[in-house]
Image 1 (cartoon, rainbow, N blue to C red):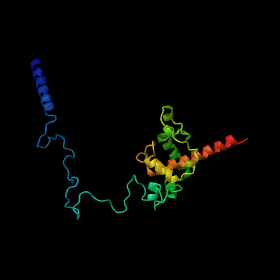
Image 2 (tube, rainbow, N blue to C red):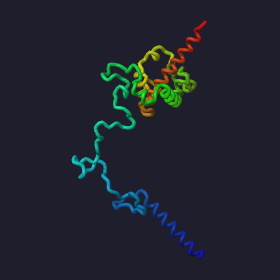
Image 3 (tube, rainbow, N blue to C red):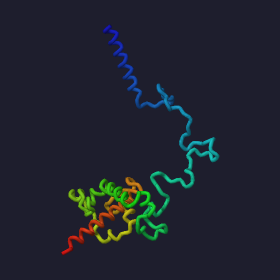
Image 4 (cartoon, helix red, strand yellow):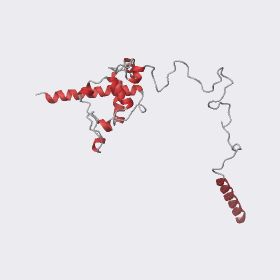
Length: 204
């Protein structure tokens, strides 16, 4: 009995070694599939010829007017933050965006949440430019108190969030269109708060 078990163990070891020895080798034969599941199914390979569609293209063009889920809207001013004729930035957050966000109050909440996640490490909780990166020796971003930021068009802030500027990275790949506009709306709320603080400090 002991001898039989030993032989079985040796046989199993040889099979395992044989299987390991086959790793990395190429073969023209199709793989041996014990459980085929959906391995074999009617489908088209990418860029292949189609006998079904009239234009014989497997890769289908989206229906005219289709908007991707990430894009949300098909409005260049909303997407880019610039006027359609490219003469300047959009002055205020588009009404359609505010409606999509559910109004000013909800937009502030969305903007506050995204600002806390992505912006506070550099700009600080209150937008003073005193985030944690400053304490670690990196460049201090400007405070939202600055006149040029207070009077900058909303579209310019949106474009900066989308594409970045100087040492600030882009966040267009991390935030949706509506979320970027919501951050702009929250930044405006922060600026109002900072302005009221300034007035309080200067009162006799």
